Image 1: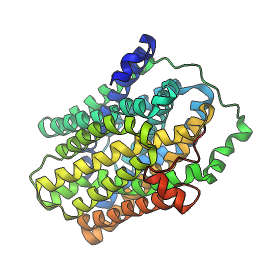
Image 2: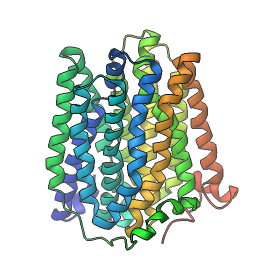
Image 3: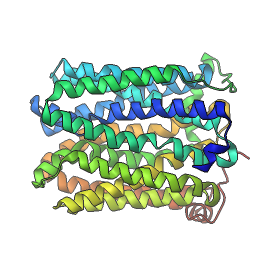
Length: 408
């Protein structure tokens, strides 16, 4: 945290306002994590309906990602931040007024625009503001909004739903989003190089995906997105299926605490030891978390799995963000971040309906066994394909070699 004291007062102010906006964004979004699957079930939805509605979130992500990434480079980060926080403020009101499965799917898809816009622009703006030599450390600190929001939001949402019902819970989530919009409106962004691409050239968004600097991290995120989408959708129902007396909000709180703690360490260390080593650690954490869920039958095991998942998430996303920042110029960061995260979007979109259909045949328990295999596959992909050859990939992924795709 000493780094923040060395920054200019103006830069510190901008970062603090941005941090407050990010905290309100993630708190409002995460308030629905432990409650929305239950709301869909209580509305008469089946396991497959729950997966389909929850997975529709990623449809909104995927469809809006190219446009928003280009907008962030052409028009600046702030307008995209405002779009994202607006979706967080509006979507809970949509859930409140309907229990129709088709309408819930549409609202959930609209809700997906929130992360597509806010998370992308937030990361790009943090990188714009960061001194290059401390990029990983500052990204790590600023990304603490995620675990803090994932700790506060689910705890608040679970408590309100259990004590006073769904309506106050949805209203509270909308209020957090509205406060976040007010903070976001105060954000100031620096002058950055604007993307010079015209409309005719915007198709290059997808053509850039062929580059291994983007394709391999996106593939890793696709596999983890499948695992994460399954986990975030079905953990509340799996805990009930097992019969463990555990407030599901505590699972997310354990994950958030671990995510918070590891970000403080990993960001700064990655500036010294490289991004590859910490991405590898994160994939090991994810694999371990899903193996624990596969065998979970007690409160301790669920909380330990949550802790491992939080450590994985708290390391992976900031490290991928830092990696993509290393591999891109300022005027293409929105596009590069957006392309890389498409893998995660697709994984989440597929995970809900696919895992829901599979769960009806083999149970939630065995679904988590399958996703543990996907997480392990992502580790193998990164160890062997993250650089130009097997040797270079393994050395980079274990912290013993440079990132050959980094822009000097």
